[in-house]
Structure formats: C-alpha cells, structure tokens
Image (cartoon, rainbow, N blue to C red; front, top):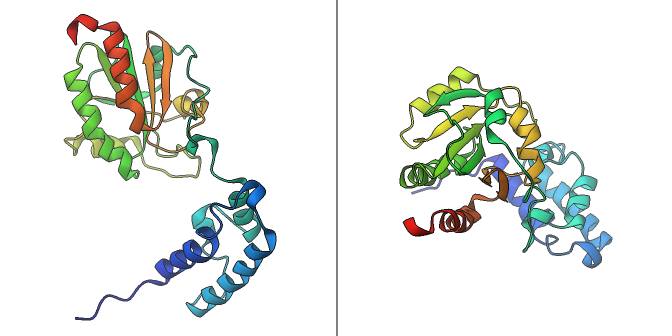
Amino acid sequence: MSSEPVSKEKLYHQLYIEILYRPFKEKHGDKWEEQPFWEAVKVFKIKAREIGYDDPLERLPHYGRNSFEQVRDKLKAGPPPYNLDGWKSPFIGQKLDVLPVLGVLDHAVGTKYEGKERIVILDFWATWCKPCVQLATELSEISEKQAGRVAVIGVNNEDIFGMGAKRSVDEVKEFLQSSADFRYSLYIDVDHYARDNVYRKTEFPPIPCVVLVVDGEVMYAGSSSQLEKFLGEAVKALYPSEE
C-alpha cells in the first residue's frame, strides 16, 4: 500500500525544523555563532526551491518571521523568559477586582459571577486553540467540585494575539452551546478590555493562560499546568476544615 504524498507545506516545515531551528535552538547567547547559521540558510534556500518554493521566504510568516535575520535574532535571543525554570509572572501579588472587569464583557453562558466566591480562576482562551478547548473539561470538573468556593470564569477572545482573527459573538456562543465541556461561566471579551488590562499584565503570551485570584489578589498567572498546585494551596488555606 502506497503512503499519501507529503504536502509541500509539510516538507517546508521539516526543512525549517531540521535546518534552521533544531541545530541552533541551544546556541543562544554566548554560544551563538553567526557563520554556521548563514551557511544553514544557504542550504535551506536550495532545499526550499527543490520542493517548489521559488521564494524561500514565502512561508516564513507562518512562523512569525518575515526574514532570515528575524529567525536568527529569535534563536540568538534564546527562549522567552516565561519558558525558563523559576519564571514568575509580574502580575502575581497585584490587586485585581474581577467584577468590574466582567462588567465590561459580554456574558455568554453559565451563571454570572456576582463576587461571592473568594477564589476566582480566569481562563483566557479562543475557540481555535485546541489546548484551550481541552482544558475546558478540567475547569468544568473544578467548577463542579469546588462550587461555592471557587468561581471558574472563561474569558474568550478570538483575537487575543492581535493578529486579526475574527469570530462573531453569536458564533462563539453557538460553539459554547454545542459543547458539553464548558460547564462554567463564560464571557466574551469583545472590545479587548480583559485582554489589555488583565491578560497582557501576566506577560505570559501563550493561551490557555490562567489567572488565579484569591481575595482580590493575584496568586498565580501563567500556564494551566501549574494551576492545580496553586489552587490546592489556596483552597487549603481558606477552607482547612473542609479539606
């Protein structure tokens, strides 16, 4: 049985990873060497033309780069701070009143937050983000298990990266109503208020991005992978007799 032919786009991706990324991803900072990178660029250009790209730069924007100089600068700079061990969001420790923020947003589904719960989880997400949608199951379980103690609030923003992604409010609501995984309160950040005044303050660019607020103070902000640890600490501190 013959296998399906590999697409031109996938071949380009393989070239990018094998020639421009993997050999240099650990060479940042003082380890960086300029000449080997530009030699690799020459090879990449030849290989890209061989698979059908007359302009080897054609697909670079899909990687957030418009030139080989930008590829070099990103590699040379090394991983972003939030990917390094021990990184903490500068938003931690700051005061955050959740109610006024939600008052600006469009309520989509679930019970509206009224400020009764002392612990709040804000989850910044978009419908096109698969990890975000997958996280909904875990957040739904937290919402149900910790009802009355923890308010789980999803904040949807389809253009959270400011790249022009669009989906109407009705389309997002239809998406939510068709999914059994979103069993908690969800709002839509139509005018980017929450994005600009909360999400960006975390300095954690990826999504899903969670913000854990305890008694009006940010206790944690960043990857959802750390949420369970910090949430457990907050619940234990506030409700020791119930644990």
